Length: 330
Image (cartoon, rainbow, N blue to C red; front, top):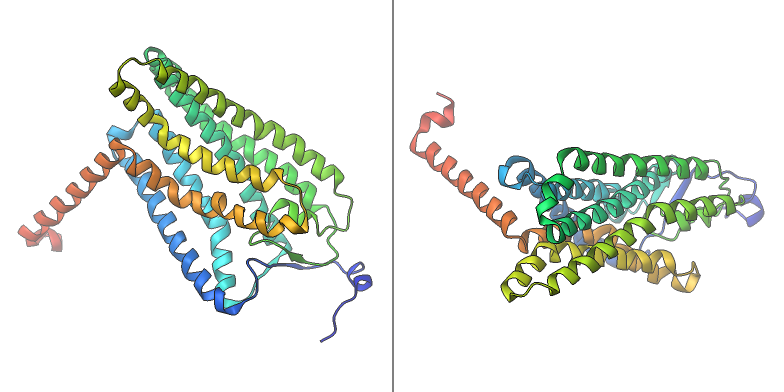
């Protein structure tokens, strides 16, 4: 097998990328496959369950749970953008991805990250209004405002992602073609381009400052006011009840933004590449899985909704067992 030299690479447009992932050690590939397939199953099951409960239970038809349902839908899309390709690579050993497939993955990943930043900030604002301005909650968080916030989040994220991907797609990639990551992330991909990427990086920085920094500031500001308002509550029971309504969301925000900042603020050096790759796992893989657990295990209304759904399912099965005609449709 003839190995292409750097001079040959420079004159050859590549047709596919190789996702290096977590290394080539075969003894770990099956173990990693089993770990991530379990994560994927739990992620899909948990988030689909939350979507189903929010859609079917009238008690959860409130702004907070409408945003939660959208967040769960986002997590389903998020995980499905990255994990299936990763799992296939672990199982078959084929870690290649076409150039168009890589750009598509990058588009959906970037779009969903931006949407999640927006949704988390909107959810924090919702908790701020509920705790700090409870008498005006119904007026401020009405159906039209909720629709504008959600649709606006998805639309803005899609537009920004389309602009960035169109710029990336006009770059030349002539080798090498190995992406030192487990998915097509922005920075590792740009490092492979043999074109001038300064304009793409500048555009990404500008759009990132517009689309990620303001939602982050809004989230932090909302929680400053929320925590201040909670400490002003005289009774211990009242403080605990108020904090319980936003503690789950605060945990999710901390995990998401904490790991996101570590990955994208640290400089792109070979020394930090493995470190940043490891810290990419929490916000790309683990956060979508733990979100339903955090919101359900720490949320009384979600647990009550799940109990009602299970009771209804059990009662339905008991009726069918008592009346065999129901089983046959007679």
